[in-house]
Length: 326
Image 1 (tube, rainbow, N blue to C red):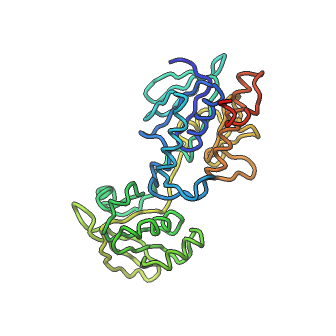
Image 2: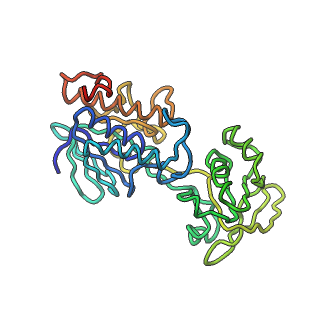
Image 3: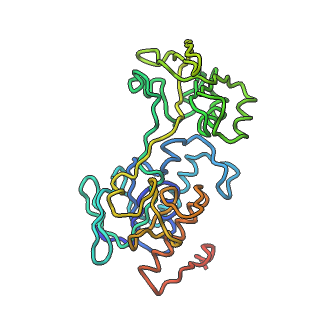
């Protein structure tokens, strides 16, 4: 493969903006992502949830935001490699070679890691036959709200995702229930109040003990966390929102300074390895704020420092993008 100026690892919001900004600065770009489509968590976990904190959008569906970011990123014709994992890093005289899990060798001068939380898997309830009913009544996210139209839906969890889906599905689902093991929630107070004021029924101090149904889910057994009393709860769908387990996978073996599953960076967003930067949720520095809005700023900054690293005569500040056509 040809050597590129910068390889971006991760096709989520920050990675896509890094691809765009590198193209804007006249750099050759390659994007690698392990998922089959661009957009990262926006597409993989909550495509039909609204995002409210992106500048210029009072609210925007996650999938629409992802598609817009992809359209913006692809306008400079970057090389895009999907369903590939960046596995091994080899240092060369003028940069690095990334070797993928399938054995492809991808030479690059610099690297921007935008891997989000890394490879993530949803936390399971941990009951018998759970895997058998995935997609047949057990869900760990919502790809299409229409799939739940008119169905009795049970949401398990007490965080933002659980309450967000309770609000988002209220206009299409049938009877709705929120199950949580206690009466204290991690979700934003505003979301909790909105759900409490909705038609959603609360089952507090309960956990899911058993699943019922063979070809599809028909109901669940709930167990009280204190009394251990159980009762049958009919439901067509259970949306599980009790967290994710994440890992940086092969990146852990690259020699990066990693603490608590995050890559440590300096004020340039450069890692301890020269020419390798990290942005977005995957990186960490003092007073780090994990937002898409701040992450895209990190991406633009990292690109500019990568540009000046490759071309010392280039200006760090690229000027206003509105001046491109003048």
